[in-house]
Amino acid sequence: MKENNRGHRPQDGENNHSDMILIIGVGNEFKGDDGVGIHVARRIGKLNLSHVQISEGVKDGASLMELWKNNENVILIDAASTGGEPGMIYRFNASKKTLPAKFFRHSSHNFSVAEAVELSRKLAQLPPRLIIYGIEGQDFSDGIHLSDIALRASEYVLDLILQETKPSLQPLNQSR
Figure 1 (spheres, rainbow, N blue to C red):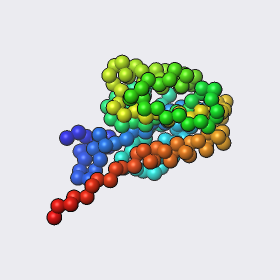
Figure 2: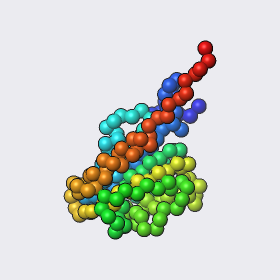
Figure 3: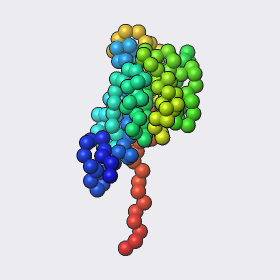
Figure 4: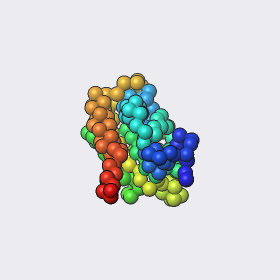
């Protein structure tokens, strides 16, 4: 039996490692909207969901690769800077398709999310399920406050992630 992320063997009714969802908030919270991924991860963390593990503030691709390599279900949130409409929300299933070249390339991170995904794919270390949410930022200047548009988009992404991570209901045993 595998150990879960809490460092002990799961008991009946407790989630095992494969049931856990790792949520990673990426960015720099001191660069305006670049901190939107951290903001969303912290909001989810405050809910204390038993099937969710939170990691926030990861700033480079090598750390991302290390975090997700032994996880089966990962959701990552980061700011995007594509020149698109601020507040636009993007969702990618990175385990199935390559990220479009224009996303996450203007990163404040040393080794971008897109580079980490593609290197993990080449090394066969990509999680079986890696969902990436990008929120188009408006203001990446120095400061710890998100723009109003990024904040509104972050609330929507929070709701999407909560729906996506809701534990499935197990069918009731019909035998008597």
